[in-house]
Length: 160
Ligand SMILES: Cc1cc2nc3c(=O)[nH]c(=O)nc-3n(C[C@H](O)[C@H](O)[C@H](O)COP(=O)(O)O)c2cc1C
Image 1 (cartoon, rainbow, N blue to C red):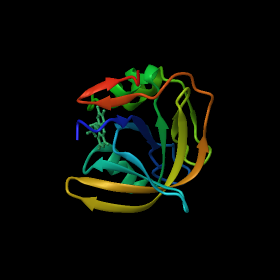
Image 2: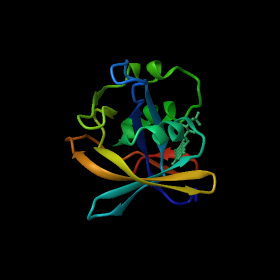
Image 3: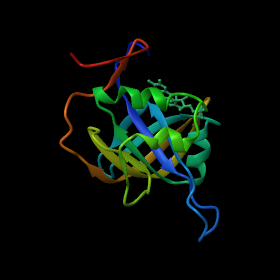
Image 4: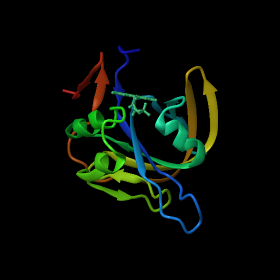
């Protein structure tokens, strides 16, 4: 599958507060290439998340999440959110320009090709991953510069 060229997205979510008036939880992000379009009506997308990973645990509790489709100039963001537990979540997002999704409260990366806000419709256990199928609730298509960040044969690439 390393020979299947893929676009790279950053999946993000914000931990739900522990109590109704408690402080909001931390943000989390995961670099993913297993992101695809599933249905047009209703609009559904899917991401396959490694079972037991931080993002899997979070999405089990939090049905609202987002995906930012990264550009070739956002390779450093993909690299950072593919690391395991090297920095606290706060530091991971510190110098990354983002805004909060109105529906999901999840970080939406500024300057990305598109951002999608989703609510999980279905979770399907599949081997060592969980397929998280989300209904797309909002889409933003900023006037982003540049082409997509892609991943092919174990390396980040640009289309040209
Ligand atoms: C290019 C690339 C694509 C990735 N795609 C996925 C993916 O689709 N699903 C997934 O679960 N992990 C994927 N990963 C791995 C996660 O980004 C990484 O393991 C995770 O953020 C680490 O979190 P953890 O400490 O909870 O395991 C990918 C990594 C890279 C570099």
